[in-house]
Image (tube, rainbow, N blue to C red; front, side, top):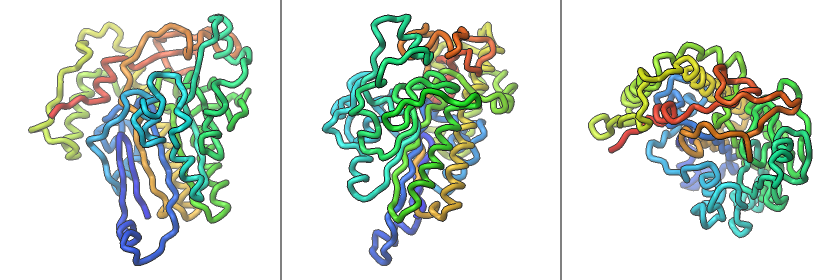
Length: 390
């Protein structure tokens, strides 16, 4: 039973579903793998018109169903609340950022666990109350792992208390891909990470570990793989950045037109009814004064998506290795489109320095490392979302 869901939205229903529905053969209950990207552009994936190397997700798309009209909550928390509860965000308690998921809103993990499923989660939660400390200096030290202040949010609303048997990931939003704040295993904070730590790879490995753990008995599993990538800050590994070093030097105007044409070629849109709209940023690439820096920003974003796809490939291979690929429903989606946000100063969920007190450079000329903090900004975001109107 291979059903898939991908990208901004992609789903595969195999003929075996029809057999099961007809009751001709009693098949085992399928595993459910739900993979979510964070702030990924509509056209980032190759199967949606992107030039980023995403062969593993593209392969899922080739045997699955790509949704082209898909709605979300426009921001991280609301989309995730609706996804996990099946309710409108406000009804699920998410009427803003950094608030608790309603305790009366049952999560899919709670329901599936009660019905005999293993339930696991890796990655970003972002559905419980997160508050800054009153003392700003102390809060920045907390973000940099230089002091401790108890749980990162009310423990009752940690994923491990909302239906997930196991959770490896962050309670807050993403802050540092190389040394993440609020990293936990269930209720226990993970206080130190190895020098070669990278959040996307960690999520991949822990997902594989949970598949191994859950496959030891006959129970099906539900695994929610909640990536932080490619949400800012623009943090990526050097070898992935190198693949895209010179790819974006022609700028966002060229990129959005190329992606639009590929969407037409893929028959995702009809150019007669879906017109490419003007760049809503109002900024032409020809007028950009920092072309090299902007091209590097986009290269790091692409590298982050690339690394996520590599991880998806490893998870798929694990399912094949244990003979569970054909009995797993796979969904891939993004919580919202590429983010236009840029330029926030340190504070709340943006640190000023690293664990060893190295200062972080905001809007760096060479983004990607832990000591930089960059965003793609409005113009690139518009190109990645490839706005078309019917």
